Image (cartoon, rainbow, N blue to C red):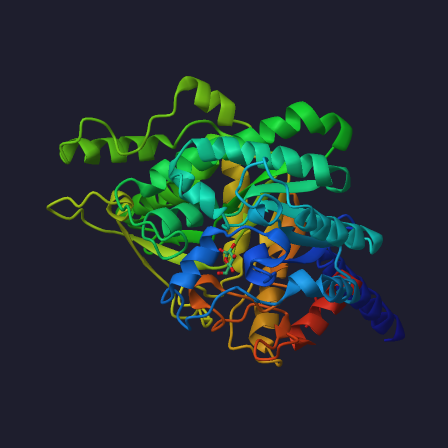
Length: 488
Ligand code: BGC
């Protein structure tokens, strides 16, 4: 009997150890948190900063649900030292933030460099390094200098050249400290909401062509930054430049219905493929070329609304990413929809599918954001199988609620998604090397203003001091980082 008990104990202990070790993140895996300049910095016109499209957009009024602006936001322009302390206390190993282009180049061009802006970022970067926190810099998170917008913004190819010059300056100024760069945050969302449906700055409505023209210019901008780094800085700085892809898993509503399966593939290529394909495989996805070409012909247009990429452009853009920075939040089910007649020339009808959510998925305060953790594992596998990146970092993943300190919903969400990442690493062999949650702080949530909270740290926006308070999820996350496995 004693012997049987002894055996049982050994077996249980072994099982437990196997279970725990399955749940342990590899030693090189890095945890951290993300933010973006316009959403946290404030100081919108401080110390020589130029206006961005977001300053202009929100100052018009009526564009955010609470009519708020990012003029002060979390005031991180003045409170950055406190933010670094929070990151340190959290045990963060990475911090993903963005540089405000007009803070260092007020009119977008290198003719006039704002030293105060440069100092701000240098101080922040040095403080992070001093605390062993690896900065991951997004070069552009939607706050285009207003003067470039007046010149056509992301619809004018010259913006790609200005972006190239701006990024060269950033590599010169900050590159000796930086190992990971992200060029443009979520080009798909910027082009869709900024230049197609007009919900985000600069608010351009151009349903038929906006997204394609913007994508063309942003792809050239991304590739310029990559080549500049490759040609002029890689040897001495030895960092990586990555493309940022927003992709949340989508699957056919009825997996046995071939039309739903076809619709899912179409939706994937029109969202993810539109940017990932040219950068990681070369050229627009064939499915997108064919579909927009055919619809444009039926609309009586002489050429496709999707600009053709020249052979030189395809070569210039292809292969310009050292890793993938993946932003992934939610999930959706896709079903087939009949094309409407008469045809409306619009990106939305170009892909023309219906989407829904599964009723069992917990919902957040953002109507598009549900929790389906298994979806992230599936998404990672899809991205891995299609594009074969050598490395993926999750640069955004987070949950929106009403700002309560007892944010169990966020904790459960993070727990599920971290588990899913771990499974993708340990069971599927996907090389995910980091997780940076959205967001470190409650912040200005674009068109939703301050009505949705994504932070693991609460910010009191009524307090001129913008006091920061730890939520329960932050304490839980600190524990995960410390122990490197997920605890219930
Ligand atoms: C953006 C963030 C935004 C978050 C939540 C992402 O698409 O990069 O700026 O706050 O989603 O909506």
